[in-house]
Image (cartoon, rainbow, N blue to C red):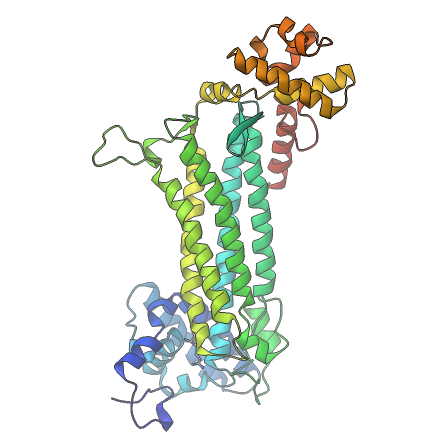
Length: 460
Ligand code: ARG
């Protein structure tokens, strides 16, 4: 067993196979290669600028790194597990390419600040993709909402028909959630976008580096103020995973509604063949597999958050190898989130609305009973509690007669409350009910169209 070519100086023997196996991260941290190369180029330029290495060495390093980037981009790079991670794989290849100058790149830095920098750059890119993905999701929701600002459907509480609402209103609720998700990603981005490079192993460095230069060159807002914090902080990744978890929680709720709505029991929507799968035994089936998978991805993403919270809990400062476990959690969550988001965006566009089925269901279960009670309050000046009681007795009558509120004869209603007049008919219909919900944030088509305008303007 030969010792490690990067750090093996004080070792007589190389690592056991199992040691290599548990230690190596190259199988997953290769995903950091573009960030690792960008950060190394900035670092080398800064070292030369400060006279710490020769400009000619910095140039050779820059060209070598560009070549490595091309090799990896084109699948020509040979990754080695013996070299543990992406940082040492790249540095070893740089040595092959440019010789001794490669050994100067690691001046005034450590893999600890290096990996923290790379990882922050990666998470930052992912946040930007997520925000764009959420925007596309919002755009599709708004388009569907605009087409259905006046489409009546049952609004549910406890998954029981409660009051009629408009589909546009329902979809805009998800636009609001997505907006808060974007705000959470923006907040995570601010926390992520600080540069640890130059913290070195943990204590800073004796070389006269310029941390502001590398930070700004890499697009960070500035250099982190404390080197111990720089190498050991992972709250940016936790904040990111938390934003991911909450986002997929939102997606899972819409996914669940798609599963319910597309079922033969509801028939509110139909997903096209593009978003449906068949059964290998039951020829009649059309399954909403994508929505079901989004529902489940949520658990997986939340699992990643819990994993990293567990890794970081009680971890003494500063760097510990435990933190290498941050990457798979984040990568897996990122992949799951991007897929889930794209699938939901696609399904929102794809779903065909069965307006008659929605309207029919919206009229079930005495869904305009609150309108009746409100009428009694407004016209007969009764306290709401009393109106609620009267309405309850009228609902019981309708239930006994197996008819809806609109079909209950006025004379029957008057046995419960003599003050009720034929005017009551004007509030018991579905369209009248939704149209009357004009309070700010309410389901009235007028309000929904206003909100659509608001979002179209905001997303310009
Ligand atoms: N692969 C390591 C990680 O992801 C890089 C940092 C290694 N640092 C160390 N002191 N062994 O955390």
